[in-house]
Length: 107
Ligand code: 2BA
Image (cartoon, rainbow, N blue to C red; front, side):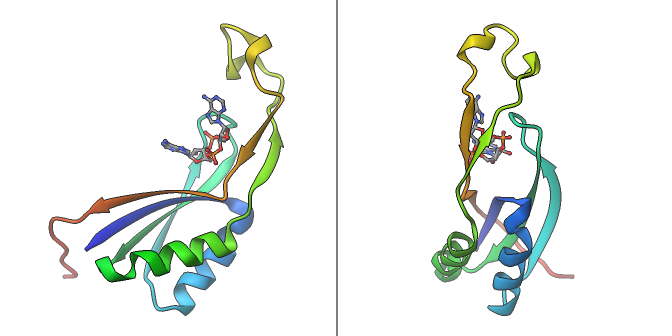
């Protein structure tokens, strides 16, 4: 079994949630914040059998869009050297971690 941690743009989160649920996957959503842009995003916890990992990737990929976002001109983003801070960054589609699950119990 695997646990997927998927960090998804808030604008895509409802589509990802619906896509996963309609395909029978159980998800937990956590409201999270990106450390660089300080924008809200959504982190999904998805426990799945090994053979379903690729299906989950397909669904997340299908609904997660790439976006170009301006980096706010604020020293917090690069206090040491503001001039090297990029003006824009590409965010997403999604950032997904796959962790092996040692034990799963639904009590
Ligand atoms: P943020 O940390 O707000 O990052 C937003 C976007 O800013 C990133 O998009 C990336 O394009 C850029 N970025 C982040 N850190 C940077 C840096 N130190 N210098 C220059 N550009 C930087 P994504 O890579 O698509 O990441 C989207 C969100 O996914 C991130 O939001 C963060 O919440 C999460 N994330 C991405 N990689 C991660 C990782 N290795 N560990 C934990 N969270 C991660």
